[in-house]
Image (spheres, rainbow, N blue to C red):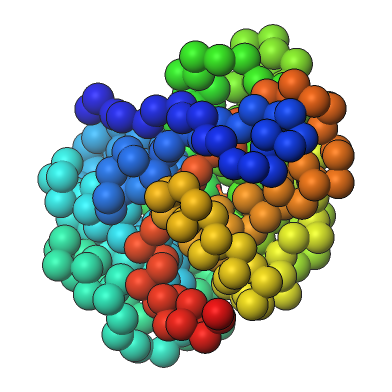
Length: 294
Ligand SMILES: *Cc1c(COP(=O)(O)O)cnc(C)c1O
């Protein structure tokens, strides 16, 4: 499938006053439902499932998982049955409703059972030829897809920024950078508390770490947590550029970029790329928060 993900320069007074150039890799434009890095992470998993002649994709996620939605839509598009294990008690929300609309069968499991994903998978594998995709699409196949972000770039950058949940996207970017023998510094912003573990996850995925900077202080209290400062920041950016971002991933990573620009972390004339990893359907559960900030 052809994809459309332009590299778009954005000008803001902050960038101009510090003399830096900032571009956005618009992976959010790849697909409305198989969005951003979830498309990148599914690509080679789908190839492999096809090659292995598996007709059912089995995967895992929380109740607001962008990955569950992406997998459900990819299944409908490429003719796989899809089953999603959802962590926690049975609930309903617009994201899960869309998963069902794409034909995904949802199975709610307790947090305890959810921990043993292989066990849940094996129960289904006895019934049909199933293909296992980890939570968030994480894994080696996923890094192959994310590597292609670097191969697609038209410009050379001094710095690349991305958000991290499992670190798979960051690992793919790091692999892509060394593959092309670039000197680009990769800045990774964990969206969870105590994000140091992302470095370990990246190493497990064979990512070279020499050019990687981990910025672990931009989690705003933990996964999916936010505060009025972050929400205000997201709102201002969206209104100043027309580019939609959300507070769970891209908002935190972009906040980090702006904070570092402000603190003169980058010399003038630096060329910076922000990877917009998409996932805007996550906003559906968060829009009300914005009404509470002025
Ligand atoms: C899932 C997701 C991430 C996290 O990617 P990892 O590869 O797990 O680090 C980042 N941004 C968005 C928008 C996501 O949906």
